[in-house]
Image 1 (cartoon, rainbow, N blue to C red):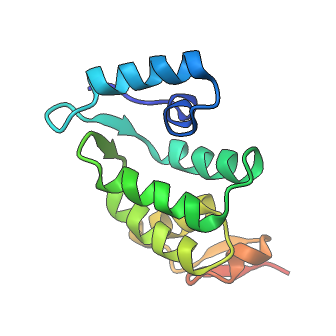
Image 2 (image 1 turned 30 degrees about the horizontal axis):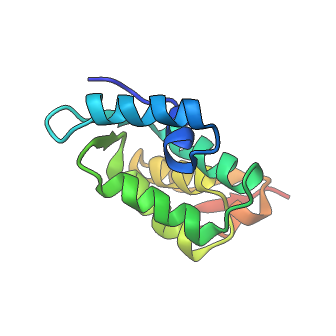
Amino acid sequence: MKGLDTNVLIRFLVKDDEPQARRAAGFIRAECSPDRPCVVNRIVLCELDWVFASAYGYPRAVIAGVVDKLLRADAFLVEDAEDAWLALRAYRGGRADLADCLIGAVNRRLGCETTATFDRKAARLAGFELLN
């Protein structure tokens, strides 16, 4: 099994650097399949959201669509996929970033009653508590 770094997924998806995009696509075609999926870990999902929003200016709906496709793709094994699905639902319906949504989902699964935060956007998510 092999894992993917955020920059490989970005090049594969955005194709903004042609030589790297070709290498990323070649690697993914050769190494990622339903029989041997490549791992996309939680940190990669968070970085993907951040890079797409801050560097490329992609709207939330586009980012959510990409994450949805990654979660559905047989060629990828997303770490803690159930938490990622919950985070994606919260992300689609709110203003917090994907990282905060994922933090909330993981903490709930781990038994946390609430997650303390200073982030006002995250505090609007179920299970978060704003510290004043």
